[in-house]
Length: 515
Image (tube, rainbow, N blue to C red; front, side):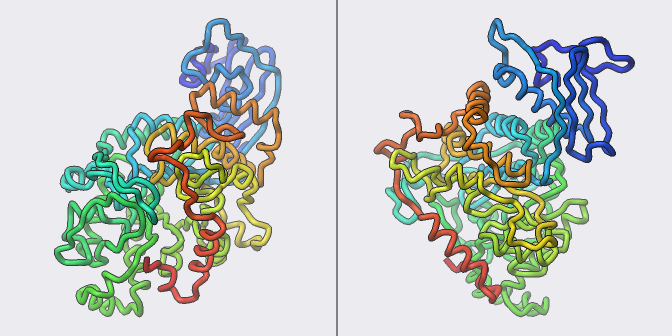
C-alpha cells in the first residue's frame, strides 16, 4: 500500500487499535478464499479483509480505481483532490490462472520494461507472467555453469525485415541481450510483491538453435553447424533426447530455479519436426531400448523425464499442447492449449489441468484490425471484441471438462514486436478485456460500455501506456511505408483451420509439424 498509494499519506495499518481515518487490513482465508477480498470504505476508516496478501493486493488495485486517475501516476499533480465515496466491494476471481506471456527471445526486452509490465499485470489483477526465455533467435538466461550460452547464444548479427514467408532482406543490425542471475532474482521478487507469479519457459527439445550454437554437443546432428537464427519460422534443430542431454537441461533448470523460484516451469514441447531424430541411429537405438514405438512417443518420454526432475524440486511442468498429443505426460502437468478448443477439451477430458491459450483470440501479436494503417504483424485480425467474447469455460464442454480449465492467458510473441512502444500497442486495450474475462470467468461487455471504456483508458493514460485507440492507430503508431509497413500476413480463419486440423489428427506423429 505504501508503494501504490504512498503519496496519499494515508495512515497505514499499525498494530493495536486503529486511529480514526486509518486503514485496517485483516487476512482471513476462511472468509474470502485464497484471492478474494472485501473493501469497506466508511467515513471514519477504510477496511480491507482478504484471504491472503494477494487478495489484499487486489483490494488496493480496486481502491486505486475508485480514486482519481492520478492514483496511477508515479507522482500526483499539484492540487489533486483525493476523495473516496463510501462503498463496499466484495470480489474474487473465477479462474486461478490469469496470465500474459512475454516472448523476450525473438526481441529482447530490457529488465526495466519487464518490471513495468509486471506493474501493468498487477493493475489488471493478472497473476501470471509467463517469460519465454529461449528460442531459435536468442537465449536470455545467464548460466554460471555454461557461460558459452551468454557469450554465443544471446545475440544474433541481424534480423529479417518483413514476413517470414516473404522477407525483404535483413536489417544488418546486431540484436541481443541477457538477464543476469541478479536480474532474474529481481524480476521474481518484484513480481511476488505484486501478487504475480513468474513462470519461466525453457522451450525444449525444439526451438533450440540458439542453445545449440553455444552447445552443439547437445544436438541431434553430429557437427550440427548451428547458428542463432535471424529469421522466423520453425527450424529442424532439436536437442537430442539422450540421457546426457537431459542431465544438462536439468542442470540449467536447477540454476534458473535457484534465482527465480517458481511453482511452475514451462518446458515448451511445441513445433518439433522429428526428422533429425529419425535420421540418427543412436537416437533410434535409444528409442528401441526404451520400448517406445514411435519418435512421438520418445518426444513425450523426454518431456516426462524432465517433468519428473522438476517434480523432485516441488515444481509442476507446463507444456504447449503438442506434448499432450505425444502422450506420456505426468498427470500433474498443465497443458496450454494453443491450437483451438478441441485440443483443450481433449486434454481436460483426459484429466489434465488446462490453460486456454488459443491463437484466436489470445495471440496479441496478430493485428488488432484489418486496417492498412496498422504496423506490421504476423496476420489476423484478433479484434478487441473477439477477446471480450472469449468464454474461458465453453458451453460445449462437459462440466467435468470445464472443471479442469484453470484459466486463460494472452500471448505476445515478439517476431514483430521490436520495441516496448509497439508492445504497449499490441497488448492494450486487448489485455484489459482479457483481464475481465479471466477474473469473471465469462465473456466481457466492457468494450461496449462507453463510460467504463473512458475510465479505463484514462487510467492507462495516467500510467503512461501507449495503447491502441479504439478507432485505429495514432499517426505515429502507423506502419507507414518503411520496414514496419502493413502486409496482410496469415488470415486468421486459415490459421485456426490449419491448427485445428493438425490438433485433430488421430496419429500422434501428426501432432508434430514437419515444416
